[in-house]
Amino acid sequence: MNSDDLTVESPDGTRLVVRRLGAGDPVVLVHGSGGGLHSWAAVADDLARDHTVWMPARRGYGPSDVPPGTKSFADETVDLLAVIEAAHRPSGKPVHLVGASYGATLALHTASANPRNLRSLAVFEPPLYAAGAGITPLLDRYRSAFERDDATAMAAALNDVTRVPAEIVAALAASAGDRTPDPVEARRSAIGWLHDLEALAGDGTDIARWSSISVPTLLLAGADTWEPMPTTVDALAAAMPTARHIVWPGQSHFATMTAPNLFADALRQFFAEVSG
Image (cartoon, rainbow, N blue to C red; front, side, top):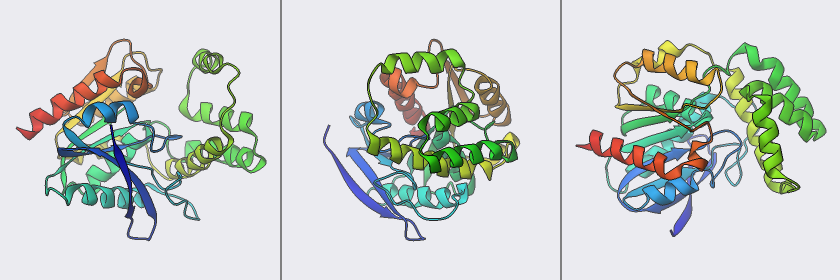
């Protein structure tokens, strides 16, 4: 499906590149750590049949700006509100906000801070356990490896943050085979991860704070995702008792790639219900 890339400027001057495609009610899809404009491609192609889909590259991820200094969720919330306003403006219709992984945590922050132009919120497996002072040593390890350009040490630090089981890490490495990552793309992802870890280290782990969110909410998870993600999402569901909670058998944290049509269908049904 045809798409176009445009620029949205955050109030502090940070330029965010946003990919837009489709026609219909506006949807903003927020990518997770290590992602970018491509992250939601398969889900977006499906949703764009009847929605206008907006996909920002978050600050710290090229081709958006990489501002100097330490990043926070407050910075990114302001960014995302600017994108939501841009998506809202053409039709005047409220926006369906969707986030995956780190992008889901950012979506929670944004819906809590200012739900004015939101019609709904959908979050897929936010890593709410990976935050606060507990990951500061991992941030320091990652930053040191980043400065040495040591990809193996960076990956090890990230595995300790995400807590991906060793057998899954091994399976992913085996599936990659002898393919060598594109160095430009790998560096772009590494820079983005560094800034995301900064924001996570500055955040908290209090799940009860999300009970203040008032927009209709959908919580999505894969039944095969490793702990502590299932326990975390269950705790989020308990803190948001009016939210719908869907757990997909046979899916994991990679469902946006492994089951994009399942993902898009669940979103489309939810959007239709909350839109009347």
